[in-house]
Length: 262
Length: 336
Image 1 (cartoon, helix red, strand yellow):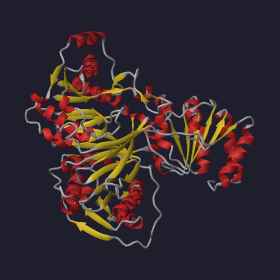
Image 2 (tube, chains in turn brown, yellow):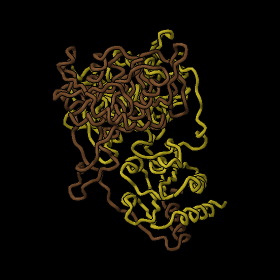
Image 3 (tube, one colour):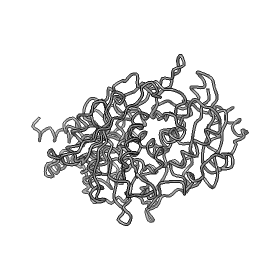
Image 4 (cartoon, chains in turn red, orange):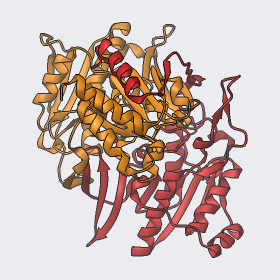
């Protein structure tokens, strides 16, 4: 069984602060991490490998330092890692990114599963996975909780708003994984040591000869960022001290009644 | 690509077992604003086996036209069957703009359609407007955990597409007398060739009670609630108000509350009439999911907590004293 996992290096958005004077993001000093949901995708891949045998290949698109998260994936138990990197890929939106990744996946050979995190915590779009599936011409199931294979049937449990759907799917399929899917394993010491020595192969534009260059990078991206801004929050509310909770509760509920909110 | 050929604002009316979700109607409200600005028609798209309620709703919430694709094969959502039907409609009628709820299925459907049509899709929008200069929709969305907002344009291709977070907008007023033109398309999908097939469904047991996204009153708890047992008082207050209980990521990550109750960038977006934040500090990623609530009440010990920056009424005090006091007061005004 061949499993491809797509991972992304992201800034730890829980550590991001806003410069109170310039009102811009302070990215300096913010640690780069393996996107947490991608760890769940990798764990699912390793579980499939443990249960049914096979090979787990991890790919990431990004600059050279994204190799750090590929090493982390290797230390957890992935067999092989590739960094997809080229200036021509820069500025890609989700359409272009998913197209590039799909061409790389095709180039790597046959596969049964493509597993990705449900979203990356920086862009938060949650659509790269499903878009990769569409470029590959395969089906996709998001928010997957578990994958089982029995008698050549693949049964996937996935979370939807109303409950859990049990879906029978043909292979190959792309699944997106989430926090509830599993608890990612820790890297072993051995794994960590081996991952430092492991060779991470780079894939450049010239390595993917059949790629349509009009579909990549900034020029191949149908969407453009017009502007960015940090949310303005100003306190215009009424702040009260709850010296006497019952009295404060009376005032508060009184205000709601007054505004016809109760 | 000549943009003149692409007309109308389309809204996907997502259903579950024939029951339309609120988000489709919320989007008809936004779609109406875009349609009027762009001088185009507002159209609803219904794909289902049981279409009656969705058609009724789309009519009342202001659709000028309703495209209907009906068949047994659309009983359960699958990206392949729904996507195929939606794409056939797009090829035939060429919409200018497509709005889809950013639900689990909506995000799958949106990216399938956008990739297939080779056009841009902006995910999880929380505000929509029109760029006066060039009649593009301006898609606004939070990123980086709510720390940054971006305005996105899709200026070179049509249709322009976006998914919009459920609860980001309110449903428009109903117009019972609205007349919609119904256009039924016979698009069938071969069952045998389907790549995925839903074989079972396990209904969520947490589903009982008022849904978070649809609640008019939300009482949310964060790390300051100190443990799962203390959410009982929030539930009591929420029940008294006829509302629902929510939580911050801190409370969810601590395992006190299931993820389905999480409000924020990685959880749900809500805009109730009243949002009561109890022991929630107000990290940006939480604010991204609730700051458009009509009235925000924050109760927190720490007077410098950022939640007070968005609060209409802030109480610096102990939640364990304030919440019981509020319960008592609400009981008394409701004569309970």
